[in-house]
Length: 395
Image 1: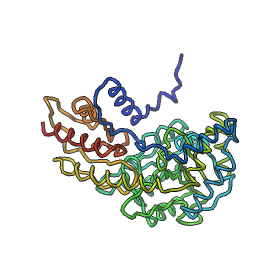
Image 2: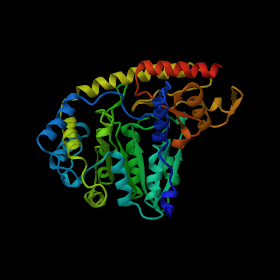
Image 3: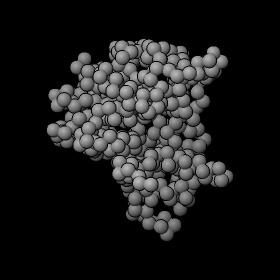
Image 4: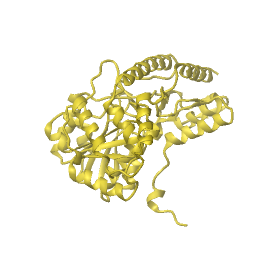
């Protein structure tokens, strides 16, 4: 059977592949420390689970409207008004099977063959491949730890062409945890408005910011920006609900309508039971989010300090998400146990084989010479993992 060229042009998710390999080794009884997973290690809060149980017991187990129930749309409307000072109506909202699904629908609904989408690197691994699947062309803007992994207005203006359709903003970022201030976002938004470029703002890590950083959605920077922005968010990260698969997008009615049309021919509605759980997550107490954030901050501070104590590794302190993205370029070209490590991919393989530590190479995110470690694991695991890393490099 012939596989389409479209599918042959993309790669499997590197982060999911690393996570699967680490879990497979664990099932063999090997004590792997997994820094690859992009999900909180906390359990879903009880009030959210209870809402799902109530949904099952009350028979809320049938088809829902494709774009989501009015109840969850109203919960999203209230959340956006409360947290972001943004006003939307139900017709401007779609609920999908995770934020990744929302993003996929956006590209399918908006990108024609040859359209260019600006993507800052390091980027979340799925962005470029989603663009390619839609027939578009990813245009990558490289950044580094020297610029705090952030793009500038000048970077954006240099790559704009007559084919530029959209730009992706991910703040806080996966994989770096970098964040953009309101002022930085406003200047980027002004360039997009001037050049008729729409903005895709991935805000899935919005709640996980530290050190008194104030999160700002690019859609709230000016009234004009809201009209050219599609905001993507969900409940996976902030409420430890990765497996529940609820994400959403808000934006112009015509784009949301097109996304709903696509969704009607693919998955139909998101799971009814998960929708009820997500309503409780958005409307209910937010205390759990704050306690989880405090624990993440402790872990971040510890892992950054430990990494920076290791020779030839430097690690910036991220302001958001639950990842660190240390620079390991000084280690490349060196020989360990008779094996010369030339790339970050070889380095990640070496750590998994020798130290039994799972990390994701920076190349997967478009940034050679780095690795990504998730600190969404216990402080004990972090300590053991960094101890192994340090011991392996010293040997």
